[in-house]
Image (cartoon, rainbow, N blue to C red; front, side):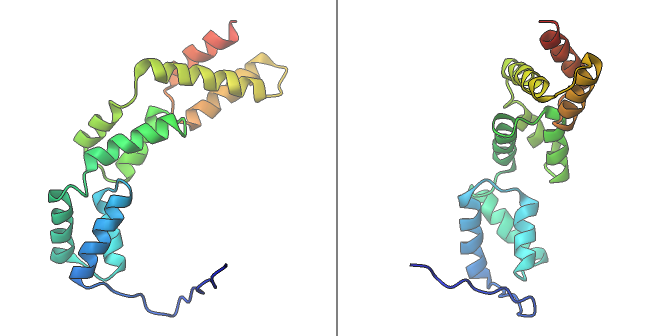
Length: 168
């Protein structure tokens, strides 16, 4: 059975939440997955809750354990590294963009195991080198290096990994 899709109408005003409704909805929003404060603040602003009221709701979510930026940072780092195979630089940049505090970032970055990081980097070098159809070894190394820089890995580690893989 298929349900008719609700058409999006940009002229239709957004439904604003009451404080009681916001508390329930935001608790559900935070319980679904880890969130950070600015994300919750933006959600509240979209629903017409600003200033002191929004900050009180955020404080309530923190006190009840629904909202925890340190936990968010740990989950974010773990997911982006293990699933998306991002390097430290890209993860760090993204956390700063999301206005996560330096202490929470530091705690989150501890989720990356040094050995696992190196193994992941070697695997990515090998995989990318196999995909590049280039006969010139220098160009192949360069393209692999650029790819890994875009992934957020550190320059010196990339060079070491490329040397390790290409010297086999």
